[in-house]
Image (tube, rainbow, N blue to C red; front, side, top):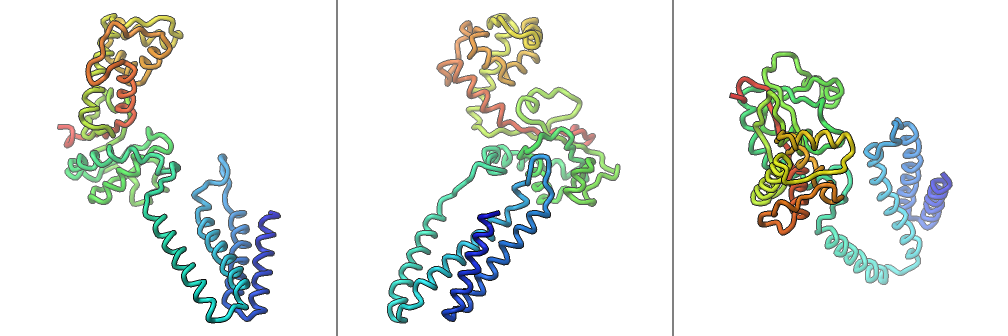
Length: 328
């Protein structure tokens, strides 16, 4: 609060100084900046503070005002510093400086600066999304559809992206969750006439799903060659768990149960241990001995294979449907 008071005071003093030398426009701009700063404090004070504090997206507008205030301060200071200069000298100094500043800012603005925060932190999911976009056409044959959101993890980047693409394609979708209805509007509320329900699964769940729904769209963020190599390595490791080639010892009880199921021939359990990263961790901790298997190209070691499997699995996304039309 002391800093805010100092800022408002400085703007008021700059306004008075500019008015004394006849620079009414600059003076009025300082008054406007001071009033905006004061009203910002009032507005932020009225915002709802949740369990995690003040949400960042509630105060993004403050950034714009901050830029405005900084520009006004710079304008006022330059105006006061140069008001005694002659009209002939000022253009020779100020005009080149302004042009240079514009050029520097324009050049600095050319590269793409992605801050790894918020939605941009999931930019790596876009290759999978672009592939998913090409697989949504079957939904047009049975809309309106219900998009289930009860299994959506917090801050995931996929569901909103798919919903926006469905809207672009003119495929009517609706939701049943009241929270999502408030987000999307009452026109997205399911009314019971829908015959198709879709839902999303990520990572190992998308690859290992064996429920009643059908998978009509799946993609990942690695190349086809990388996915094929990772899938082949994962399958060899899973088979190694079931036939005893891979020996696992010294596990905690809860993990021992899953390892025993795989050792008893349950291939689905073995695949889940590989896809979910358990076997990779066990191998790194010297709990699992994979030396009985030889990694196939392009992997020189099983460590490389585990990293490739993790990249493939962690970027996998699938859409599943419960539909008499799509699942035929």
